[in-house]
Image (cartoon, rainbow, N blue to C red; front, top):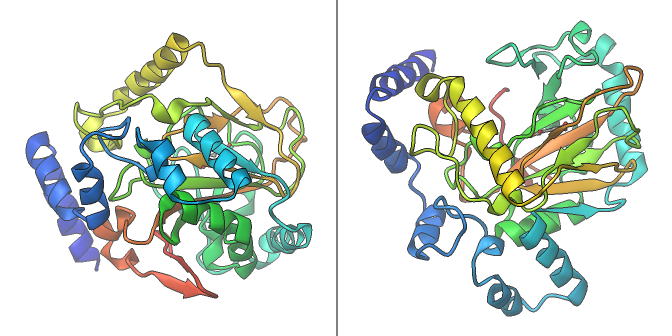
Length: 338
Ligand SMILES: O=C(O)CCC(=O)C(=O)O
């Protein structure tokens, strides 16, 4: 498998020198019916990379066709306009306490091979409790693979039902991040780093595992930014690739986000969720972690990223050993780490 992966990376490096060829190969490799149907709909989305039915310019007609109860319709109008929704108290506290007990126990009893990502490392590193500290932006990745308690939360009925509605199919959980402290990650759109075969057709779920306190680095976001159109990496791509685009492209993208926000007078808003509240954002919504000003304040939270079944995370192609889709109690997930 290592040989296959190295070969894939060598081909990728070679075609980086020709972005047109890269784009052609990339499109052929990631071709799927879902993406095709978005392309055939002929420019109905604010992004040239398509999106969900809720992004279409005939959203009102699409909504009317679905015959939903009035409260669901309002929620979907908010999602369409703002790019996020809040599901208050969607997760039972007992489920959260069960997962927190797992986390509390990690320093003594971590699952074999558990991984963490750190901003300075390009890949996951083995879990080490010393890495989990304030300002470290450490994230335990895909804990749902190890802990059924995390799957209960990430597939809680209100969460799964909303995702299924906007994605138009059963959600496939492709990645999770667990935070002990605020991430302090600059405002960004997931589409640059979380790569799916339908680049705009995925969503993220943020679960408050405790009440979010001022100073703990609350989640912040730019309402409506999912409709700002496309920043193109190397003039063609929705996602960033370090080798292809370089670090400087990330600065250009940040500048673009700032400019688009200023044009529309949009300021970041902050989510002070209570334990059990859920914030769901659209793949294109600019969001991040606000600065941590109280170093004693934890901000325990769990994030999941999902695409619809039928779409795939790109790691299924460049990490062929990680293509497996796991079934668990009627839900489906996949992981690039385990
Ligand atoms: O929770 C946060 O502070 C940010 C999380 C985030 O940006 C992400 O998961 O994409």
